[in-house]
Length: 480
Image 1 (cartoon, rainbow, N blue to C red):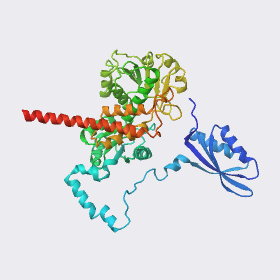
Image 2: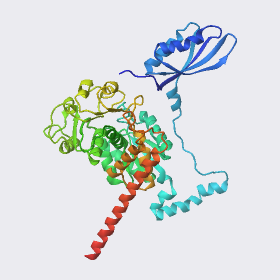
Image 3: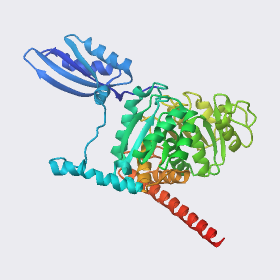
Image 4: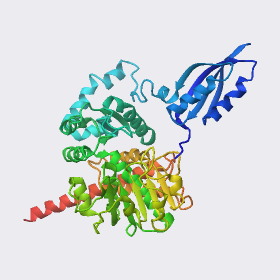
């Protein structure tokens, strides 16, 4: 599958060249000849004999970027002075900062923001801990916690190397939901230490976003923290992915005129994301699902089932299909992949039912070439930004937390996540919906408010129902 030049591999090359020759006209030709794309060309300085030009070009990867530099340096009369990777420049010094929300211009303001005035606020919170949400940043703060064990497609690269990703996550929280998120990279991959550390940090936050923690440890970390804490704990790699997949699938099924409860779904991947997708789809009404991992279909007769696989075997694949992924895809209506590249080909997709739906989400190389899949399927989605229908967690996680924080919820559950998925799907209007547009752009103004409102309302409904149950229980005890 050919990869197109991307701004992710954008470089700026400072060149010096003869001001009277034909070298300037050769720059564009040289870059295009090696498959790059010039996005800007600026004269940095000029003299009678020599000029300096900054050429900005998009490449496919780092090797391709170097070939662009080599091609420019090979032009007669051109000297390469400096090459800057624009992505690295963007990250210099980090991508986020803390700013004061209140002015500190004089002694009066200082005495209210800090001592002695702050003492009265602390005493009020000590007397009524619930006031922490009203009087501190807790009401709008989320901890983005990682141990660096499963970062993007990079694997176990450790906490320091994970920080640029966590900073990016925090920046997205602020940009799309006006939430103050703080990256916390833990120098441990021990489950007990992670759980205890987050528990100790939790009083300062209104929510915990677990990020890039490898399976199966992430299941235990999340489960234990949800039991311990009175704030929502959300593993975005699992639940953010699941919400976007459900939203996209709802709209894809609208395109082909099928129903979630009737379609046959084949899944590739039984890790953190795959399991979360499966559980949310089933909660939303999916009934006919077969999940495959490296060893083939997950079924009750397999002897290698860990607790997670055992749950999948018990709740899916009622016909106990024991073959491989290709066999599971045959006759299916939907394929969802969160696994490995190129596990299927066009011949496999051709064996699916008419008007099939393909979600090939492995990154950067999907489970099946999207262009090949389009030859046989009605709707195709990937995790890539250079194809239509990108399944991207940023579509939901900021807005989900916005809704949870606004409701002052103490947890997040499947009903809230289904509400988020439905709201996300509904952002795409009937007039806009089509095979190449089943999820909206993250920059669509209605997206975050619509999803946040749906999550907030679902959380408030759940709180009201709990209050009614408590009141009913109290009345029953009084009657006894």
